Structures are given as C-alpha cells and as structure tokens.
Length: 250
Length: 290
Image (tube, rainbow over all chains, first blue to last red; front, top):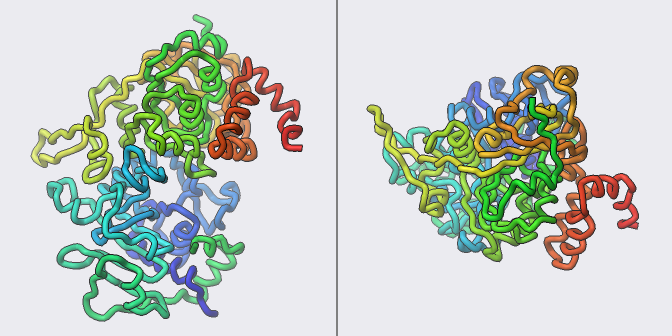
C-alpha cells in the first residue's frame, strides 16, 4: 500500500508520543486525534485518550465516533484536565497560526493584540500547557505559518523560556513540530528549530524555501518513516474512513 | 425554608449597571441564556463580564452591554471563533483581560475561597503577562524560590448560571457530562441567580442522578428561575443538545448589522422567556426559513 502525505503526517505526529508511557494524550484537531489514537493502537499502549468531551475511553474509536459505543475508563471533565496539566502527566498537540525559529507560537490574534486585525482562537490553554508538560505542534501549511516574528506569544519558545528562572522552566518541552514538509525539534546548542526528518520526496531546499528563518541541520537528515501496512489499515478503515484528515491541507 | 423562586425580570432588578457579572457554563454549553436575554431587554449597561465565554459574551458585546470581558476563551465550540466577539475585539469595542484557561479556573477558585490569589506557572513568557500589566508574580517562600504568576481573585458582584434541575431552596443539580466551574461561580459571587430546566421537589433529585451531581449548594444561591429550554441554543444535555441551525443563524448575523438587528428583535428581545419558547415550539423558525 502506498501512503499519502496526510498518512505520513499522522505517523510523524504519532511518533512524537513514542516513549510517553502512561500520560494523557490530548491532541487538538482531527489529524492529531487520529495520530494519538494510532500511537496507542500501534506502539504506545499506555496512553490515555479522551472522547474529546469528558470521558477517557478505551479502544479504537473512529474520528467523530459515538463515545457511548466505547468502554469508558475514566472521567475527564475540564477541571480534571487542568489538574492533569499541572500534574505534568499530559502531552498535548496544538496548532499554530505563526511560529518562529525558537518555537514561539501564536494562535491568538494577527496584528496588535489590543485591537487585532484578526482575532483568532486566543491564548486558550497554551500558556499553561508549555510551562507544565510536553507540547507538540501540527502545522499543515509550513510556508504560511513559519515566520520571523509572531504577533502575539500565546505559547513561549526556547528563547523566552531561557529568560525565566530554572525552577520555572524545568517542565518546558516542545517535543516536535510536524508540518506538511517534515518533522522538526529544537535539539541544537542554541535551541533553534532543527530538521529532524523530511517527508518522502521533500528536499532540504524545499523545506528551507518554505521557511523565512534558517532551519538548523545537524548531521544527516533522515526521511520521515512510512506507515506500516497495519497503521495504514487503522488510519483508513478504523479511525478515519471518510478521509476527514485530508481536508487539513489547505 | 425560604422559597427562592423568582422570574428572569426579578433577577435583572437585582443587578446594576457597572457590575461585575460572572456567567457559568463553558463555550456554547449550558449557558443561562434566558437570563442573558433578560439583560438585553433591560437598561443594564457597562457590565464587566467574567466567563468561559460563548454566545453569552458575543450577544452582550454585540448589544453594547459590556465594558470589559475577563475570559479564558470565547468560542461557540462547533464554530471555533465567536463571530460577534471577534467584531468586538477587532473594533476595540470592549476592554479585555484574557487569561490562560487554567489560570482562569484559579481566579474563580481564589474568589470562591476568599483568597487574594492562587499561584500558577501558566502565563510566564507569554502575552498573558505582557498584555495584563496588572498581573503580578510572587516568589515561593520555600527553598525552591520559584517565581509564579499570582492570579487575582475574580471579585464578582453577581453570577448567573443554568442547571438541569434545582429545588425551590436553591440547590442545583447537573445531569450532563461536566459541571464546568459553576459551583465556583456560585461561591465566588456576592449574589448568585440560577435558572434550571426544572424546579423539582428536593426528594426527586436522586431519581435522575447520583449524589455526585448535587454540586450547587443552596448556601450560595440567592434566586432560582424556572426556565425550560433556558440554555437554548447552547447545549444542555441530557435535556437537549445544541441547536446548531439556530447557532449558525446567530453566527451569520455578525457579518451584517441589519441581520443582527432583525435577529435581535425576532429572538433576543422578546418580552419573556415564555414568549421565546412559544416562538421556538410554534415552528416559527421553520416559517422564517421557508
């Protein structure tokens, strides 16, 4: 079976959860939700996942599936989710409207904060997430999102975090940034964004072209891994038979 | 025992312009909409709203009732960006204080517990600090010495919320998946007014839900309003889901001032909640669409 870009992105996001063990996996948006459920079904069985309402559920619930058909293993109302955030046993996937080379992220507003040109989602839970537990980002359009500066810092990047006292930054981690072109991390001396892998068929030049800032490269850049046949089956037949995931690349 | 039953308009008579008003619920979920509409047909103005915001915030902003909004987010859930709130933000029509969603919970809890603040890491290094110049940090008095954001208590003159069931004494019961933070709103505000789908005899509570659903204690409730469909068009499970078609119509009026004025007249400024429910059940909406 030949994997398509959306499926490669699902797997690249799922890989961000590898090694997490028993944490609350809280992906925002359809493609990240598929990725979280795939990670649990494939290689990270300890993950806890919700129906995106208030229940932690077992099993392989399809996207938008009826949670009453699933086995409920826990109760996760919003108050408990915040407790979970502060306890650190959580890994979230968020989106971004702008992101700079240190991982500063904006999905709050475009233009001046007090009277924005475009009010977007707002700060939401981003400030608390970043200070408390690992965060991964899903960016379906890298060229449009990567930027030299962000208009509003809804989630801090490594340069801003470096200015905080050690005690405040000890739980901070941007685990991964997955885009339509590749997967990135911040595993560099100066904590700038680094190419971790590029999706099959994407050259380093193309990835760089789609970024106004210089992407750090250390050693050989690998290729994002392909889904296994079983992972493809899960994505196509179980989690997202109607192909909702493909609508994210606009 | 005091009978706390009252009407929407009697609640409004207890409120004043310039007040800080908390609104329970979450996004487009279990919002006290019959009370919000009662505010719309009153003279109240210059309100400071504290809310995990949904159409309550959008409607009050669009109607010019708001001076400032303190919020963790404002969203219609199925429509991620509240369109009327977007207009208010983009025209600079209202002052705001936006907090991290979890930090917002701490502001409610601090007020409920009569603490000056609760500490958190949330906000450090972000616009939450730079855009809220009144927010201060504190240093841990223990060996760690960690610097933390001190989220101040949200002092509220009054709060309004909507429950599935209540008794006439002011006990409240939620039957849906999430209480949200309504108990904290009730405890935090000087006065709390609670609408409910049904006012039932106290002994009936446990016929519909377990003991864990009795989360609003009458010690923190000053008035109870019978309002079936009181959260419409937001969801109020298990009594009803969100009216997505109605919400879609509401959202669309943000693009057109004339459509908004018409919607406001047709639906938001009816003389009573009874008239609103009658109009809904008459199928007047279907006529409007035909």
